Length: 520
Image (cartoon, rainbow, N blue to C red):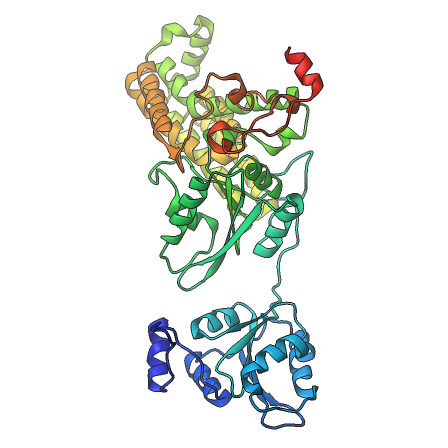
């Protein structure tokens, strides 16, 4: 685009910027500037060009350029055009150079007005909803914020609903999302860095962190990776995830995503860095640890005993979702002596006359449940829930009646499918782990299962997220570091932030006198 602008400017003999910079500037003629922008922004009928002049002095000519449908017409009419036409003052000699300052300070009614000379910046601002004001005799333009976007109201996130806690979720507007964070973190240490990513979309991205809490090396590493992104479009946060994440070939996420502002604020307070992307309700936080996928924000809003019990349920659900089919296949195929005799006789009776081996049955039923889950998600809500419920009953019952699969494998697949939803944030890796362990178990029995678990563990231990070990603090033996892992300790015991993330400002709360006496 910049090359095209340079070509047009050279054809029209516009002058380039001074001081040796290859930066393009505007002409002092409103007519020439309008003609240039019309030739540049061709085949776009929604761009409005409005010329007008002062009612008492025809030498004061103006023009505004904006995109219809992205601006507030009333703001342009009443706060820009009307004051410029009606104001009265005598044009003095030499006033041309300070005319823009005069308009900004005394004429234009807008909270956000800035001067700009670079053509590419002007075009990007107009296409984002700003209004460009051109003034006769001035080789510079004013950008006035008149944007008015239609956006979804703040509602509870459907993917992260809670019984107790905030009902607010992010929307597709970056400014609204930033305000939801600022309202919860009203401190000067909250730093926000805005940037644009995408050669064509120019998507706004906001980097958030707490100065004095977040480690400078982590902030610098995130900035460096973002600046290296060279892509034409950023339409969703996962574009950025795949471009900057550690272990790009691993199915495990090393960048956490959430729709909830309270989770983002909690992560910022621990020393993490957050990314807010315009056009998507999902925010990103980093570094990301494996333990985060078993933690829920509601754990910290309820009694710590109940929260710890729920967290243990998630760990159990993760084990069942990844290992139950593999262990069942290993036991029934290679290690029948480990199954109680009565249960083994029942399984053998149920499998009598089955045409396929156990591993094929397990693969078939788990894939069928994945099909039903995916179809339920893609269909409209009323139809999707019906399809999932009725489909599971019909497929399971019909498969057993037709003697395609045995009844025990239907039970195994059902338990596995239900366990998936205890940890929805890690659903993708669970599918890969289950398939991997199932194949190894069908070949080597329990030995294959153990080899698979060891391989996955080694892989997880080798991953780092922005320099922080992925499995910390699960690998620590220090009591202070494991107070928020499998169990959630009460708030009056969690006095320190995670060591490897918030070590720059480790103290979260000072011990009270009661805590000090109890520790003694």
